[in-house]
Image (cartoon, rainbow, N blue to C red):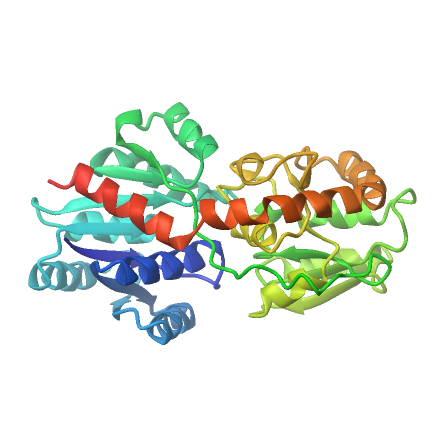
Length: 361
């Protein structure tokens, strides 16, 4: 079965890494595929970086140059590419990729889309996310990344018969058992895009509360539109000595190995890759109870889950964390192998290929 994956990438984050890991696993399983990367004229660096990352993994990847919000020439070019490649399945990631895939496919092509989650951080994003849900009526299959996401899509009107739950893959190696972070020296670690839906301002306000242990420090790995605003908030709260802004990092396993816990105060999520990476590396998790997060951890054993957006609740959780840290770390070690097996890229590829065959025209 010949397949094409289409993505309009942003900063390298969860969805982008899922696509790279998934395509690598499909190729290793013997499937034929091509990766078509939308490179937008207004911000070509995202597409170009993603193409470089894909090619470094030996994924057959080609750019689809796009001008403006809807480029008719790009649609025609994509249609010709899909026809020349005799593509049987088009798999879109993100609303822009879905629009181009839907307009370019022929009547014999199966169209699949992965719903990675929603940000809803501004009016334009909410408009496009609503448009994507409307387009879901026209596709043959919608992959959702967690059971919670599947149910939320059903609640918004997506037909259950079109939905398949395919949890995100993670491919980090098992941790070195000889590396043991010191609770007195290690920091909490946030990994993710610095955008509104990640709720980092809630965590900063909780960290500044008087009841929060002053030995707790925070490392922030990531970048995004809220970086400047949140750095200013951190400074205004007197946290400069306790918060380090690391920027975008490629050494996440090394950062996790030194972390006391991963923290993710998100307001909305699908199935965050940061949580899967922490669980795979046997690191405790302190996260919001949103989306598929409860499905990725064992509350009370490997993780503490907190109400999203509630500064008081986050402050209490931070206050309680030192006393529970050792219990959570032991639980994370017990469950690490299970997480790595459940979210192995090979399992993602197996499920994906099976569902392609189920819905192929």
